[in-house]
Image (cartoon, rainbow, N blue to C red; front, side, top):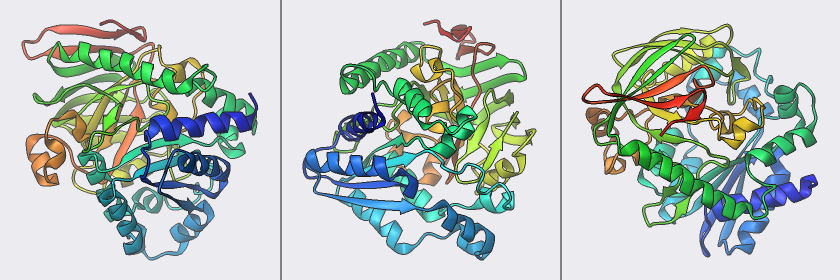
Length: 406
């Protein structure tokens, strides 16, 4: 297939599976100016599917660089009121958000003070986005737009066609009916989550080179696939591709040390975190080490008091089509769906019944983390064993040699 056909298929997935767009819904499409070919296809297909109105919000990384270099410190976390209102209005209107990822210049911010890049985040908008996610107020999804800069970072050469091929294989774009393939895959992942829930696990234990980590779970949480549902019952899939089952940890009960098994490309920072190793005590990250990028991670962890605690634990094995590509994409949308991962920062309330309606303070009181940060990093692979631990202390193998055991 040529690039135009792959764009068409990916845009169809975003509209008909990612947000599962319903006639009359307003749509917001976000991306960088370099993502215009995919944005335009998404907009056209959304209108063909009955969208009431499609708004497009473009970003420009060079303008962002100018801000990081020149703006006053307090502006790095400021949210323009009109932008916050746009998201609030979209949620009030039961709208859909389709976001496009794929960094066209991954090294653009490499020479900027890491404290400024790591600490730069629209805090009010981040808070609103978490509120909408946890309460199911919008249907949303993330897809990607391959480009030369991303290809150079991921493949070592600016071969966009080769990157499109890897994305197409990961996103099942070559299947006869990609839309149906994704609904079928969600059934498989849902069954995997059910198999974990039957064991009523109290914790998950990861062991491997440089890793001995125990993640305690909340007693009222459950394993989920990324088949989300809005507050009014609209099913959607936030990540395309997705290969994970995930849970919300008890942020107070993570202990031990963990070593990342893939580089972490921090979006919007121009920084690649390599050989990341973190140590937890009583749930909190108390030590960060890396061969590169540690300062940016530390800056993120200072965003708010809960940023150094876990908000997600997710399991992925070698059945993942993302992992089967053999590509380290340098894009969290893909890399987190190639192998097991954890995320420091805000928790996913969907995994805890009724938690989405609680205030942030009440979520924290029950053990569900609440933060304006959510950063995933990859900790799984062929050398990492994953076990479930019951409240009675029974150990249940979950993943061995990157193969699902249940």
